[in-house]
Amino acid sequence: MYNGLRVLAVAPAFNEVGKIEHVIARVPRDIADDILIVDDGSSDGTPDIARSCGARVVSHDRTRGVGAAVRTALDCAVAEDFDAVVFLAGNNKDFPEHLPTLLAALQRQSADIVQGSRYLDPSRDFGPMPAYRRLATRLHPVLFRMASGHRMTDTTNGFRAVRVSSYALLAADLAAPRYDRYGFEPALLFRALAHGMVVVEVPARKVYPERHLGQTKMRPVRDWWSILWPILEGAALRLMGRSAAAGRRRSRAGSS
Image 1 (cartoon, helix red, strand yellow):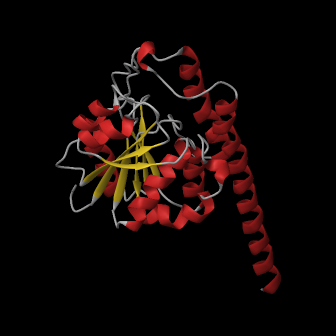
Image 2: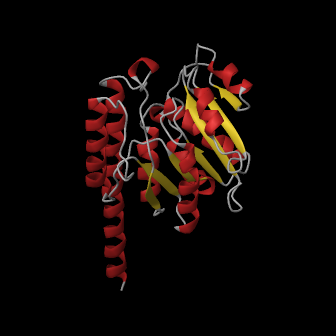
């Protein structure tokens, strides 16, 4: 528990033997009330390793995508009355030592979502991060800002804290299967902002493992598109919101 918040620590995982055990071992037990691994159809024994390390495991019957895993975790948190969920990469890229920073911002700034940013981290030691990921993680926030009007530096970083009561208000909007892959996380940010929620960033270190250990499950083209189309959807939501607001103003002016 953190300052009265009941906290669920979550790592979505797909074939992460050799890494998931390190993630679980590094989660501070004085902060996380429970550790949940959402196994997205692994075939390498990831769920068994996670259980042997003391984590709780929920498994999908097939590989559905990281968005579906994040949604499963958030839905569990709603059902079990947690106050906050903190997400970490299943391949040990993130630093659980930064969880207090996320949760402090959640409380101090009355935030609904606190996004970790590798680009606000003073060390900026990304390890052997692939060049195309460096480009993508720089470009996506620019497009996100253009579509949403909200400045962020690391919109594709999965290291974040979410206030469970806030997610519950957005859950129905994010239930469609089209969000099952990488689109869920940027869509979550867009939906939160569209509802007037508070989204903030804090520095958070992120270091990629060596290539032979597996750096990312993201596939070229198909998965790149899955993080881009929510930007178009978000821009449309913002435009519709402006149009609706303008319509209400005209209606009030006409009735006065």
